[in-house]
Amino acid sequence: MFYQCPKCKKVWQYPIGKCPDCFLNLERIISEKIKVIGVSKVTIPTVLHPKAPYFVLALEDEHNNRWIEKSSQEYKIGDEFKREKMRNKAGVAILRVKYDIASAVEEIIQLINGIKFNSESKILILPTLISPQHPYFAQNTNPEILDALIKYLIRIGVKSSNIKVAAQSFDEIPIEASAQKSLLLKVCLENKITPLDLAKTTFLNKGKEGIIFKIAEEVFNNDIIINLPILKLDSKFKVKGALTNILKFLKKESYFSLKYLHDDFKIIERLQEVLPEYLTIGDGITVQKTTGHTSFVGLILASFNPSHLDRVFAEIAMAKDLPDYLKKININEIPIFGRKIEEVQYDIEGVGSSTR
Ligand SMILES: [Zn+2]
Image 1 (cartoon, rainbow, N blue to C red):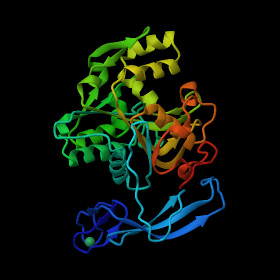
Image 2 (tube, rainbow, N blue to C red; image 1 turned 30 degrees about the vertical axis):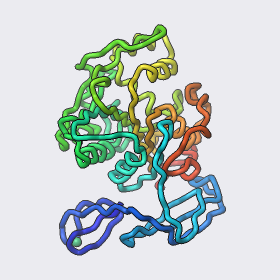
Image 3 (spheres, protein in one colour; image 1 turned 45 degrees about the horizontal axis):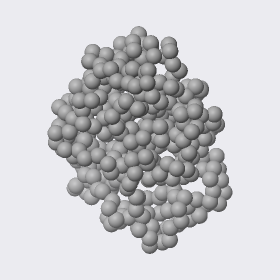
Image 4 (cartoon, rainbow, N blue to C red; image 1 turned 180 degrees about the vertical axis):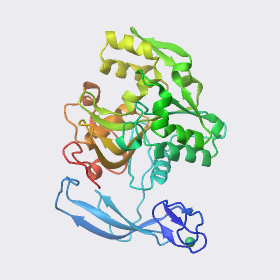
């Protein structure tokens, strides 16, 4: 996405907001027809680009805007560059995001291609909100992603009064403190969205074969559920992301009594069987490693299959010794859309704080 000043017609590739010369709000330019105008082949692998050869494409859209992109697929000069839309709900979409989070969120929802929003759609969003920490620490979902998602939904006609952002504290820290410090509360208020503390709502019993979950009734009262976790590397789960975040739809006390009887992996796996379909958009922009340090990874992932999303992220991060529920998924059988795994893969845990 490009941004243009309506007066002086200067163009930026990043949403800088206002033109620094004219002080006017920039207008969005959407690239619809993209052509390859240059190709170079890179044959030497590096730490951040371990799979070689790959191609660096120079691209140009119908407005003469130009940019470069990495590709594992070879193109010829003059070829049209097009991202294939997701045809299969088991698929995972991957996009690179550097500065323009808003356009990445918009583009990934369009790639996903499987949700029909309308003005009456009731939407429930579940970001990761686990600690009263500033976004810098990458503990909670990046507030810019939540903001971009809400603004996109409103732009395509969803009423702000039909959007809810849900959270729940599973420890002694009041959810309000986390919501405030993470800046997620600020995003809600600026967009006139009511934050929802799930602990104060009602829960329904759902389950089969011995495990009964108490799940927030809200999950069944909305048309579209969007799980919006931040993706992390973790010593126990290897990937903490889509599957662990969705546990926040459970009643706290019931979750802890289930944990007393069953291991976390089993709870995570069985919970999926009783939940309605939901979309996960994973925040992989800044990723926390098992050490607690962060690394700029610059990715956003989306899928209707949360296990597949976590599995793909594990593959991107080159995580080893995965828990069974991820290990049993054959990565080669997951349809991938947007960027290819090998284009974005690197050993996140193995490199120091990077600035890609
Ligand atoms: Zn201007």
